[in-house]
Length: 492
Ligand code: NAI
Ligand code: MG
Image (cartoon, rainbow, N blue to C red):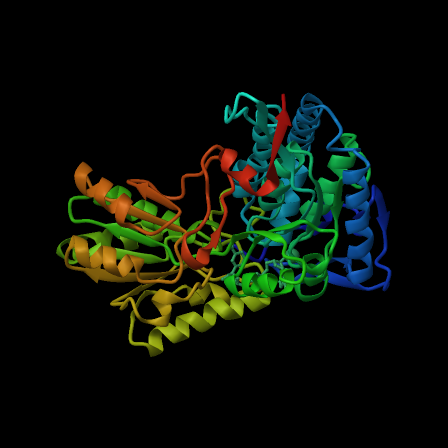
């Protein structure tokens, strides 16, 4: 355990505006309500944030509608939107250190990660989707010589973006960038645990000169502000990342207006280590796959399937690698693991360690010692002897808790790996090319990593099978959600 007593000094971090960003202006909530956002490393309040209610969401949705229908945004040239998006990316990079500090403070993430991953990836989303702005095209379709038939790719309209707390700025950017590239307008409802970087992003978007009403940012509570956004008749689609139960709620609330939905709902992803794998590398990435970002990752490799033939040496290597993952002060650049985002999430993760023990799994590495300090720290935790039907193996914990399950052969492990209602990600470790390809085909998951874990790029699609969601973010696949297709028939 690193020194967590010398915790993040909040006073050195510049805070953004804490009101609602609606139609290019900063406003208090109409109800006058606020809520607190806390520093997970200390449990202390950072600041109070205006809490959007239904009336504020209504103002924002109508502003986004006006900006859309008035042509302020979809009426610009594609090359102009491209320039705006690159400008936003540039501003994120100019304010990289400040944003990295803010994300670290609000989410409990290690500063090394927010510097190296969160903020660059957010700028990267704007740069990547900027380049698509003038490259999404319709087609001419030669159906009949007496007609000129062609398709148009049009923006969907007003997008409601609802984001989680594990990658706050990344998730906001990953939704706003493709939406804007195609000429949509946006109302963003960031997670109540981590609203700060989204508010700073709103300032930067305004600074980039994006017209009023095109992007609106309204922090608020999911069940109120989030649900109001989902129900709003002026919102055409909801892009949501979060818990599957929330997805079910959103689907119900979206039914009245039959909104288009894009869901990314987490997982219980299998990471499969075959006997012929490079065990050192596999052990290293088994740790990386579950301890990175405190395990608060939708595609974390939380179910570790290990061939029983190599279980002993592999487990030794795994425990050795796990030593380098120790939670500590997120502000220290050497820290690799920060704090769990909130008290609720901390309690949830701790409860699963109890559940695992009650279910009869063997606790090989217990991260609860870290929990005795101030703030919401939990160290790397590894269970062995887990059965795939245990809650420990079936339910998303979203914390640094690994469930190791032994397997006998290829068919059995594929069957078990697929035995989950999730299907976001999977990984296989083997030196046998044929086995790797067979596994990649057989696994029911939106992404399969072979001899690596957690690789990501804006150019590669990402999304779930089964109850991990539908639709893809990344690459041109994102535009299946953010655009609609119109057929035009012209008689010649
Ligand atoms: P959540 O799904 O409740 O929160 C995600 C976003 O949805 C937040 O912005 C929240 O305000 C909003 N929201 C909540 N209820 C809503 C509703 N009825 N209508 C519209 N929007 C709503 O996730 P939560 O409660 O923060 O975390 C609980 C669990 O969810 C975690 O332990 C983890 O297992 C999972 N999770 C998965 C994520 C992923 O990346 N797939 C991200 C965050 C959490
Ligand atoms: Mg917070």
